[in-house]
Image (cartoon, rainbow, N blue to C red; front, side, top):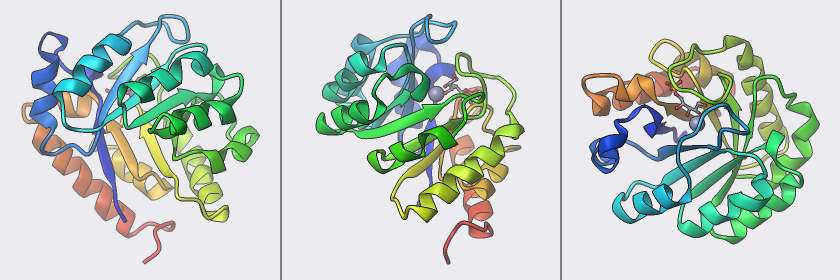
Amino acid sequence: MGLRISPSILSADFGHLVDECANVAPNADWLHVDIMDNHFVPNLTFGLPVVNALIGRVETPIDCHLMISDADRWAPGYAEAGAKSVTFHIEAANNPIQVAKDIRAAGARAGMAIKPGTKLEDYEDIFPHLDMVLIMTVEPGFGGQSFMSDQLPKVKRAREIIKNLDLDIWLQVDGGVSAQTIEACAQAGADTFVAGSAVYSTANPRKAIDDLRELAQSATDSSWWCAH
Ligand code: DX5
Ligand code: ZN
């Protein structure tokens, strides 16, 4: 079972962004880039120009997490820019199936993110159009928040839907993922893990990534959902 660790550069030093990306590149599967518009979430990061700059300078595939309103209008542009995965929030999309189609048509994997307060069951019919589902394990907007363990049943439910529909979809968790919480995420069914502060706020980010992967792998090996 392949697992993926996607360090979030939200916790990196923005004054040395390219170096910070290069530092984790040998160990990271993806680079998680959080786009915030101070409208969908109460925080502002960066947008397409910065993503463009990173894509030209960083070899690790970019995993864009769009915490922005009007995903229908803006999401495909990130795929066109060369992000290999583009995740929009279901709460910010008018026609989510069309957004997923547009992202795929522009050459990226299409992801759908869901906030802690949003019910997953209402969106099951969108799953067949997706390459990834992101279950938020904090309220989106800021790094360094505490993991919401009450979201684990939703991760489990998402894994059940993926299994029942026999889909090839990655299941990502984002928010408060650390050495203390990643095993519970893996046991619940996650296979793709975003970690910001648990990577960048340590003395050795590359080792932190490897340690997280090892914990997730051993929890997955003994989990209910992983076919042996
Ligand atoms: C929060 C972002 C996360 C954030 C995670 O809204 O989507 O990607 O960087 O940070 P940590 O891992 O520190 O919770
Ligand atoms: Zn994120």
